[in-house]
Amino acid sequence: MTSDQRFDIIIKNGLIFDGTRTPRFKADLGIRDGVIAAMGRLSTASAGRVIEAEGLHVAPGFIDLHTHYDAQLFWDPYCTLSGWHGITSVVIGNCGFGFAPVAPEARERAMLSMTRVEAIPLETMRAGMPWQWVTFPEFLDAVDRTPKALNILPYVPVSPLLIWVLGFEGAKAGRKPTAAEHAQLCRLLRESLNAGACGWSAQRMLPTGPAAVQRDFDGTPMPTDVMHDDTCRAFAQVLAERNEGFMQMLLVSGDNHKDRKFYEELATISGRPILMNVVQAFDDRPHIHRHTLAWLRSCYERGIRVIGQGLTTDAGFTFSFEDWNLFDDIDAWCEATTGTHAERLAKLADPARREALRGKLPQTATGPLPQIVIAKPALDKNAAWKDHTLELAAEKMGKHPVDVMLDMAVEEDLQTEFFAAPPNGKLEHLQEIVDDPYVLFGVSDGGAHTKFLTAGRYPTETLIKIVRTHGMISLEETHWRLSALPAQVAGFKGRGTLTLGAPADIIVYDYANLAVRQPEIVHDLPGNEWRRIQRATGYKYVLVNGAVTIEDDQQTETYSGQLLRHGGGQPVTLRNVS
Image 1 (cartoon, rainbow, N blue to C red):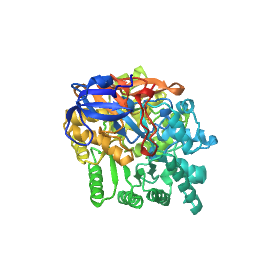
Image 2 (cartoon, helix red, strand yellow; image 1 turned 135 degrees about the vertical axis):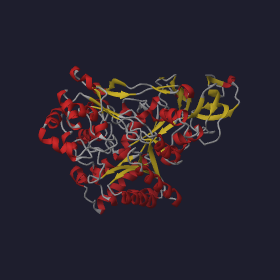
Image 3 (cartoon, one colour; image 1 turned 30 degrees about the vertical axis):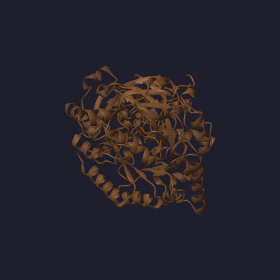
Image 4 (cartoon, one colour; image 1 turned 120 degrees about the vertical axis):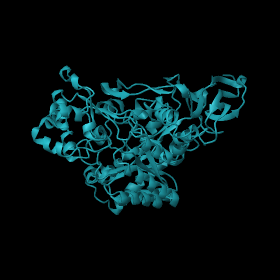
């Protein structure tokens, strides 16, 4: 590239959706030193490279606010699935789970927690995590040094803070911190925010509630599940003092009125936004999402910044009992599915446990248990039951659906694969969630549940299902909801729109031919582990900070992503990208 060229890249003749809800327009887009430097009619003579976008859509890269790439980013610069589906920025540290501060002697226990609560394989973490840190600022330094093809914005996960200050037993007991301990917790939070974190997060799925479904590897609650309300209030006050930051919380206690008032209280104390997970439709219980949407509207009207994150994907769960962890809302199921492979096998085969397992069926995000499908029997003798629901197989066998499921799983050494369709299949319910202009799309859980779930496809799925197929909202609205809105509420500075001076996080895609590919199993994780993936078709180019990271749906192995300390980053010149 010569010194007299004006632009590093010109994207020519694209149909631009700028993320601001402005009507689409045809224009060229010029990129210089990692930012959008010009829009309009630009001479290609002034470009180091020209990307021809005639017939293609040009839009801001998607921003994924709910991921668990805290470990995966160290071995996967593209944070896949996200990087394959037009996502250019992700948030880590969600739900209160993370790896800093963690003392060296506590590292194994920290990884063990993540094997169940987020279903990340232990051997993968052991082999893939560099553990070059103890404190949270040191963790951010390690992320900063790591090659990245996406931007990373960090939240402070609360669970490691509780363990650091209260000790493991104290944090798990849920005792109220003393005044001195609260001061130390707040000091650690301030230290983390000073280092660049953009807020804090916690899962509070109280063990007495109906959805305590994400537990520790031994079946006990996570520290955040039992943390004292006053600790949340103290953390909210820290954000108020700084007049910055964001909160993310999943709160389920069994008392919706109480939970909602607590969200409102934290938003009021802090004066900052709080992201509420999750707005989900259940086909047989539509009152749940309708009441949630009505409450969120009342928050908007009263000026209380509680923002709902909607589950808009219809990705289901494909699982076996070798790894499955999402029946933890029922104590008998939680106890039977914890432990080593041999222990699980023995417990699931135990006739003495079956009455309790039959007596109370899980009613979690997987939907009714009898509707679960036998997706892939491991033995030829059971092949005839493939694609049967447990309910149908039970009728034919003269058994209870639970016995059908567990007898087959035990006979096949826990290798039987089952499929649980999501309980949000009705389009009219999806339309109700989409119609709320401030509900965020997503909940990809990227980096978590890697053997069960491929929800990282949600941006592509949104464009195909919600817009192209069913026309629920316009493309202008969609790109605002997938990029600008999440950027605004989570503290991204200057990202999420295609405007002059904005970082050049850009997707160029073939709208008519955009597709989500079929699921695959790939053995690409450290520690010789495997996962389920779904790739995308139709992303002609993805640019992160002005560098092309995806071309024709393929990785270019260009690592132009940044750690977005305090929500921002330094401009990146294309000349310095290797």
